[in-house]
Length: 163
Image (cartoon, rainbow, N blue to C red):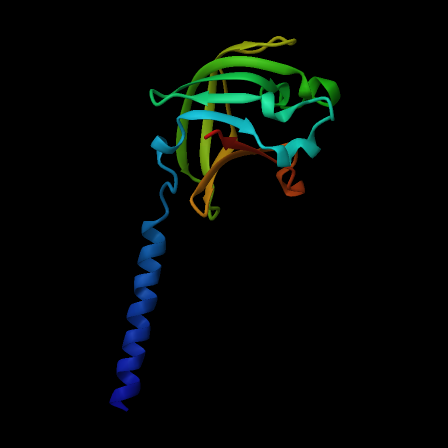
C-alpha cells in the first residue's frame, strides 16, 4: 500500500507542475525583438488572391522602435468590407505596431497596426487601428497572419520574414 500511495503523490505532483507550467505560459509566446525586419505575404497564400496580384510584392517593414511602413498591401486590411477588385487594390502606409497578449487558448499572439498615414484609391479614416493580425511561432519560425474573410473558413494570409 505505501508503494501505490507514493505513486499517487508523484502523479499528483506531476499534474500540479503541468498545470502551473501551462498557467505560467499564458502570456506572450512571441518576443517583440522577433518582429523587426521585412515581411512579405507567403507564396502559399497566393491562391487567396487574383492571379495578377503578386503577393510577394506586398511588404511590411517593422522597426525596433515600434514603427512600420507598408507597401503594396491589399486594401482589405484597412477596408474590412471591401470585396472583389476593391479588396485587392494596393495601399501604402505607415504607423506604429504593438504586440498584444496571447489570444485565448490559441498559440497566436494579438498584433495591432495603427496606421497614421494611408495612400490608396479610397478615403481612409486616420488614424486607423486594426487588430486583424496575429503572430504565432511554430518550430521556431515566427509568422504573421490575418484571415482573408471569416476566420471559420480558415483562409489564412501568412506573412514570412525575409532572411
